[in-house]
Amino acid sequence: MQQDQKPSQAQNGAGTDHEAPSGTEPGQSGKDSTHNRDISSKTVFGDRVLCAQFLRDHFDMPLLKNVQPEDIEDVSERYIPYLGTEFESDSVKRIRILDIGKGKRRGKEPPFFVSLIEHKSQVDYDVPMQLLRYMVCIWTEYRREMEAGREGCTRQKGFRYPMIIPIVYYEGKAPWTAHMHLRDRIGAAGKVREWIPDFQYHLIQIHDFSNQELLERGDEMSLVMLINKIQDAADLEQFIRIPPDKIDRIIRDSPEHVIDVLVSAMESLCFKIDASEEERTQCVQKVRRRKMGYLFENMQHISIQEERRKTEEQRKLTEEQRKLTEEQRQKAEEQRRRAENAEEKLKLAEETIRQLREKFQS
Image (cartoon, rainbow, N blue to C red; front, top):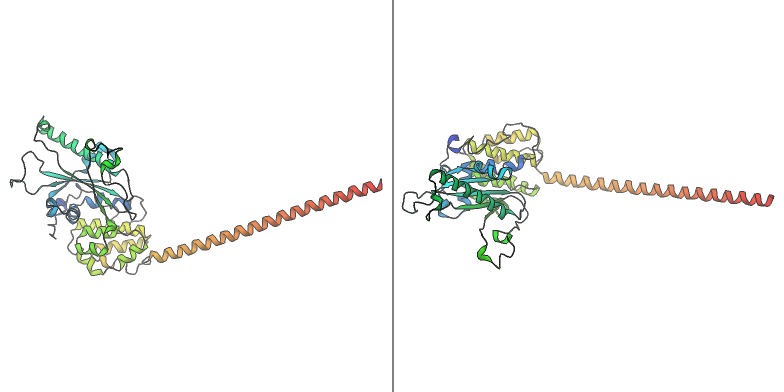
């Protein structure tokens, strides 16, 4: 695989193309419910090195085979006025077409194409329609931009809109069961197919890849995916078993802005496994020193599977005690009812005797 020509902080767009990861200071405390998700979208795909690796790794097409960080421009912010907060966790990239000036393109075609990356942690059956709204907004903004430069150009026969590659980046463990084509969300589409617009999005499911497959790619984006794969105790155990040198080799020469993203990913993981503040601080320091292979060395929470087993045992014990207490309460209630019934019978017998005595005395 071709290695990235790693850009400087300015070239990468730190502070412009992507926001600095939150919570990267060692020892930061407090759990943010949005922290775990944010690392999977804006922070990761806002880094052009990681985005270039992602596109090269997952698309077998000439246009992306040699894409480099400097070919990518993040234009996500342009579309928030159209779609508001619905769009905030997604990424739109303009990717420069590399054969400009080589006679391979017609002059009126855009000098770039667009990748639209939609992040999902759960199956969303309306994702084709959601992507369509995004795509129409991208084309509408492109038309406005072109018309501002030369009025009437979009009405010409040769005018072309940029190609958009819709991508769904799915981190959930459950199978993705949503339809892949837009037409499948339209009623009776099979009977009048020629009237129905259609496209197919590209699905990237991180759990489709084994740890070994991701490690063999040898890039930081695959390492981020490896971390994001950790959804339960079994995933964590597999991650811990990875030979440390294989991980450290990947980040040995990583630029600092990529290390920042890995720090955020690792902090997110530490929150998931309920690591202590001291343990989170140690993890951050090891990532900074590019010693990720030894992240969980001496950590008390090295096996959340054992912790979950203990928790389940405690839960069962508590449930048994609750049932026992309930049985005792029911027995006490039954004894109280019996005592009340016996008392009523005694009172009734006493009343009957009194009435008999009065009858005989009269």
